[in-house]
Image: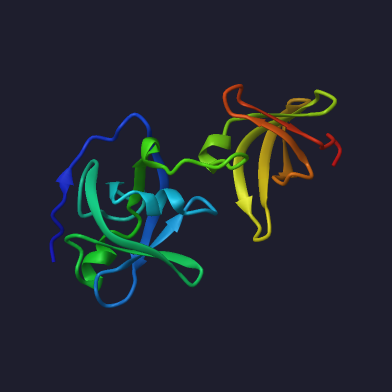
Length: 187
């Protein structure tokens, strides 16, 4: 089956939220690998923008729109079905496709809730105003999320991990691009 998608422009506020992992089931559904522990950004948007896989052969070029009919959690993963994708073969053709959604379509967060993408790039200091590093990634360990930081120390890149929980995080200021943590350089 040949997939037929509408070409699209990637908006300036587009955020890569995951990728298609391959076919799921016999009706054209596919598994989605999300880059966040909370897939709300994926669920909130009924139109995804896809870009070709960086590794796999893709059935399309550039950016295309994908109209999502349904997306849901299944076991430990996310699955979705889309208009124009009606068989396992067509779903499998999308394997590796990169999924983008406009940041403006993300649901609003509650007080003291943050999207991972908003934390990447923030500077982290401790209560003693020592620089712990810059957030380069987050890891979901199940019960908690961990900030992965890097900083230069004596000409070498040092990686630090700080649990992103209220016990250790005093303040998150997205506008100032700063996180204050109760964490030492030698932890």
